[in-house]
Image (cartoon, rainbow, N blue to C red; front, side):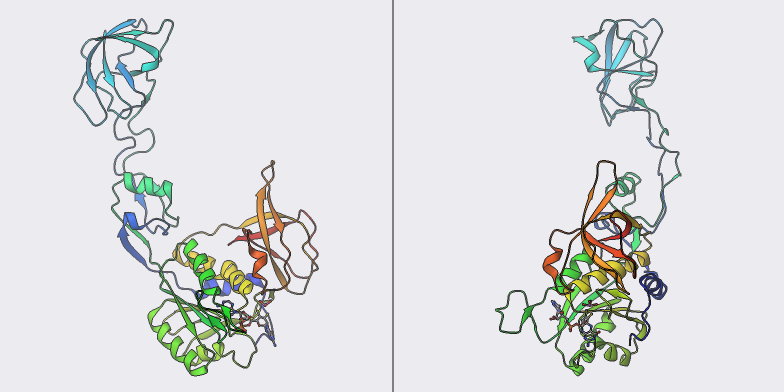
Length: 399
Ligand SMILES: Nc1nc2c(c(=O)[nH]1)N[C@H]1C(S)=C(S)[C@@H](COP(=O)(O)OP(=O)(O)OC[C@H]3O[C@@H](n4cnc5c(N)ncnc54)[C@H](O)[C@@H]3O)O[C@H]1N2
Ligand code: MOO
């Protein structure tokens, strides 16, 4: 393995080409928050669907010489219809969101008149404009217009459009079934009492957090001991029941690093093994007999999280149909010496007053040093064999 290491972008492309597009599924709108939309949404009606009153007040017919005292001839509250203005010296009580009563073309807010029983006296000198405070039918979009394309994550704005256009069930990318598998005899559950040489399993929860932040919530966690048969049997069963396997540990050169061999013996074809980067160099990626994506990440906590953030989650998002934006920041602080490998450094992000995104590099000792990650927002990728000047633009990948 790793005779010729490929670079980070080539690795990214290999992973993208390997992953089949995720199929779609139709789910209830309420369940769709955070999922990737896979349908076009058209306006069910013109928007707004009727001439909509925009202020609480009275509606009237505008004239050049508007009477300063108007009789309130009726009321039309939001949700009601049927009122019509019959006399030009009358007005109709209205509320925000009401249908504009027939015959009216001007709304005067309550702040601009005094009310005395059935009579409204306009504020002295107040000169309303024809059409004011009316949101006209169809002003925002025509019936049948496309208001949403697929390939966006469903958040607040998308929800508001889906709901207002009556999309009660929505076509989204199917959430892949993902198994996260920790390998290693030294690993014990979070709640265990540690014996000498043992450490708590943390990678699986860190990786799950990253996936769930990306909207992938069908995630199960598993642990396998460093035993060839146990690894093989577990992987065999897990491959049958999942679309994606994310392993941590067991991919390097150790006597008990069985993962790549076991995967290949189960028919998982190696797509890449080793990327010219630190950390995360020994990553192994393959594709299973049923097109399952298999990511075997190096066990060091920082390495596994870097590989997840740089390759795995973006690839799954792309397979869901989402355009993953490329983000750059201006690097600040000590970035260390160049290597022949690309380097990833944890960073804190903030914007300066000119609107430039700054990435403050956080030093670390090695890829097992997860304590350096606390309070960071992501990583930056520094290209190989170049020293990076303060202020240089670098790619950012948020956790
Ligand atoms: N002779 C060589 N040795 C190593 C090389 C190499 O090229 N030649 N590469 C090093 C690099 S770089 C990395 S990264 C690691 C990757 O090793 P593995 O993927 O085989 O990972 P393990 O040895 O199983 O574990 C490494 C480290 O991480 C801890 N770990 C593992 N899983 C978890 C978990 N779920 N939660 C928390 N911590 C975990 C594990 O205890 C080890 O300390 O190999 C180098 N060696
Ligand atoms: O590549 Mo390893 O991930 O540095 O420790």
